[in-house]
Length: 384
Image (tube, rainbow, N blue to C red; front, top):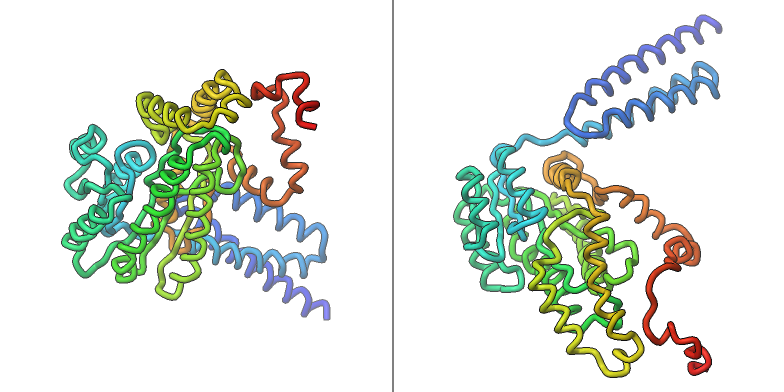
């Protein structure tokens, strides 16, 4: 009996060594998971061996190594092979940086821009290889989407389009939801949601040919209710849900769908100072007299400071977003959701799982300025 047990333990130990070695070999593949995986496997293995008998500890650890090997196999990046990728919103910010990054890696890039004669488009033409094509693509213009589709089809022919990255987005003028004009709500939905949906529908036939990838750049604001971002967050939440539904529906075609929900990164999504001036004027023009009276002119004009605060708290380096997008495009088994950025995943989990009262209490800001009516000592008595 003891001989049988010793042989069984020896076999388990041999299997563990083989699987452990295979896992370590897999860790040589690109990605940031390596050190985390080694630590987790090591801690799990130690816990198994300390808490269980040698036989069951080795058996459980062997199964863990097997599962980890399967997981890491799915994280291997596919060869580029000049795969073609369409990126919307490439004039600046994440889309611009991503176009350059994928071009350097050898992808055939179609960089959709709002202004094909603008500085962002010229910079891409000047700095990137001839594999990159700049396309005039206002995603709210159905004709421009059709023209872009024709140009992409002409170049990719029967090999299809490997990936579509719905990156184009706007934030409009951040303010309290009551103050934001309906035109701003509609504009955010037109660009951040309806435009992405229309681009997706137009290019899906090419994605089906390649069994490729659909990647949408959403936002942490899609899952975390952030003040001043009612229009932006709602449109991104719609995009996130659309992508989740498409992930299920397109799986039968072999198309993999991912959503990127970045935290705060410094991009040009807010537009120029002149654009913000115009949006602010539009907001003020649409306010009713009673709303202006309750909030006060000083409070309304101070809403613009939110952009400055947001920019200071945002990360200047967008490389974590680029790495996650590349993984979504290239990994054998990409994730359904990515949350690059400091504490973005933590905040998304916190907003999803903790009781609402706890969440609201945690984010309560007692030091923030108050509307004019709330600063009046007799306001509560008037309200009664």
